[in-house]
Image (cartoon, rainbow, N blue to C red; front, top):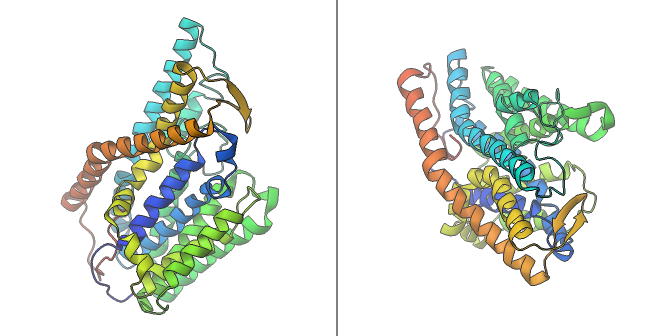
Length: 386
C-alpha cells in the first residue's frame, strides 16, 4: 500500500458514533408500541455489521503492511486485547453484580421478576466462556449473555487474530486474495448455508464484514479520489433508505455492501456538505466514546427500565416476549431521552477512567517490551481503534 497522510478520518469516527446510538435505540425497552414500530429504529441492529466493515478498514489501513513476524502478530493481538478487554470485563462483572442484586432483592423482599430469574440459563461454564471471549464463536450457545453486546466483541477479537495471520503473507497479491477468499466464503455460507451453519452465523458475519472492510482499505489506498463529490451523501441516503424499508428481521448481506460503499465514499471522494456535517464536534465526540456507548448501554437501559418498573410502577405488557412497563407516547419520548443522555454520560466517564487509560497503558507496555520487528512501516491514516 502507498503511504497516506497521517491523521484520523473524522467522518468515519462520527459515523461510528451515530451507528452506536442506533444500536442503543434498537435495544430500548418497548415502553410504547408506536415508537417500536419505527422501522429505522427497529433495524438499528444492522449497525453492528457496519462496525465489522469499519473495523476491517481501519485495521488493514493501519496494520496491513506492518505485521512481518510472529512477534508483530503477538504485539498486534496484545494491543487489541488492551483495547477491547477492560471494557468487556467491567460490564461483564457489572452485569453479574446487577443480576445477583436482583436475585437477592427478589428473595429477600418478595419482589416480582416478571421475566424470570436474573440468572436465566447462567452457569459457571457460561460465565467462563464469556470471560474468555469465546462465547459467540459458534461452539457454544448462550441464550442470555450477561452483557448482550459482548457477542460482537467475542467474534471480532478472534477475527483480529485471523487477520494478523493473513498479514504475515508477504506478497500483497496473495494477501489480498486471502481477504477476498475469506470474505467471499463467509458471504456464500451466510447466503446459502441456511440452518447448516448452526451457531456459526455470528463469526461468519464478522469475517465477511471485516475482510470486506480490508478490501475497501486496499482500494482506498490506491484510488484516493476515485469517487465524485456527493458520493458520501448518496451512500448515506442509500443506508438510510435500507434502514427505513427493510422489513424482514434477518441478516441481510446488503448491509455489508452498503457499509463498504459508505466507507469508500467518505474516504475516496472530495469534500462536500455531508462530510462537513459529519465533522461536527458533537458527532466526533460520539465517535470517540462509541465503544463505551456500545458496551455500557445495556446496563444503563436496564437501570432505566427498573426505575420505570419499580419506582413509577407502570403497568406492564408483553412486548416481543418480554414483560415491559408501558408509558404514554410523551413518557416514552421522555425516557428515551433520559436513557440516551444517561448512556452518553456513563460512556464519557468510563471512556475517561477505564477505556482510554487502559488503551494507553497497553500501548506503552507494547512500546517498551514488545518492539515491532524491522520492516516497511506505513504511516497510519486512522488511529482511532488502537
